[in-house]
Image (cartoon, rainbow, N blue to C red; front, side, top):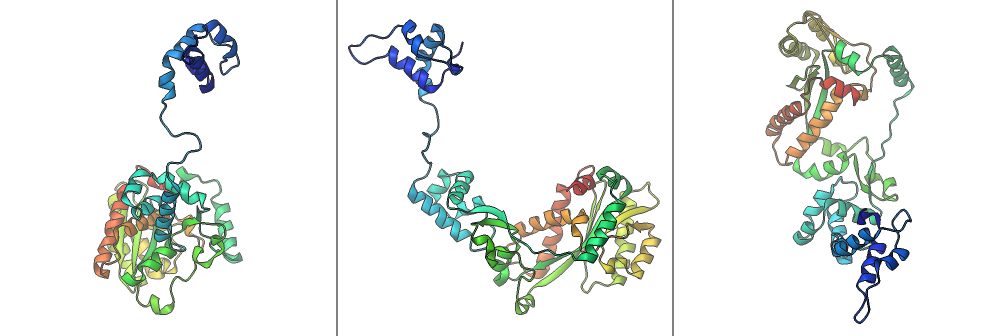
Length: 360
C-alpha cells in the first residue's frame, strides 16, 4: 500500500487529524480511516495512513508554482511584447530565441522560449504560414496527371534503385545591405500573426519582392546541384550568362566524370533533371549521349515539388542565409554559397539520401 494512492486533499486530512491544534488530542487512525479515501474510492489501510503522515512534509513541499500562478509579472509580460514587436515588424519571420535577445538580460535568463511563445500567444499571435496564391493552369495540371499515372506504382525504393542521381539548376540572390531588412521580411514563409494580420499584404508572400529600381541593385548566382543515391553531392557555380554550350561543357568535364567516379561499376546512368529548357537543349542532349546518361522524360513543367533536389536547395539556402551577414561583397558571397552547400552535403550524406528526399 502506498501513499500515492491518495490525493493531496486526503493526505492533508490525514496529517491534520493526527496533528491537531494546541490542547487537542490526535484522532486515532481507526477513526481517520472512516473519513479518508483513496483515489479508487476505498478507505486506505492504517499502515498507509501512517506512512502518509510521516511523509506529508515531503509531499507538501513539491516543486513548481501554484495552479493558476504565472512565472512572469504583468510588467514583464509588457517587456516580452515590446521585444516581440521590435524583432517582428509586420511580416518579418521571428523565433522565440530572437525575441529573447531584445529583452532585458535579467528577464531573458528568467523565462524560457516556451514561456515567450505562451505570452505572445496570449495576445493572439500564433505561428502560421503566409498565404500564397498558386495557379498551375490546366495545361500544367494535365501534364502532372500524366506523370502521376505513369509512376503511380513506384515507391521510394523503386525510384532509388532505378535512379543514380537527381539534379537541378537553382538561382540564388545576393542582396545589398540596404535591401536586407525587406528581404528578410519577404522570404520568411511563416511568422507570428493575429487572425486580422493574416489578411494584410505584409503577411502574404508576393510574387514580386522588389520594384524594378531595387532589382537592379541585386546580383544572382546559379548553382548546378546533383545528389546521388549513395549520398555523394556535386555542386558547381555556373557562369552568367549560362548557355547550352556551357552546360554541355559542364556535362563533359564535371557531371560525366563525377557519375563515373561515384558509380564505378555502372556503364550508364539514369538521372532526373528539372524541366528547364536549357538543360535539355540539343548540345546538352549530345553531351549526355556521349557520357552515357539518360534523363527521365517527360518531366512536368512548373513542378519543383516533384524534384527531390529541391529539398537539398531548401536546406542549403537556410544554411546560407544563417551564415551571411548581409555585408559581404558579391565575390566573397559566392564562396559562401559553395561553403553552405558543402555543409548541406554532410547533413544529407546518408546511405540512401534519395529515399529520404523522395519521401519528403
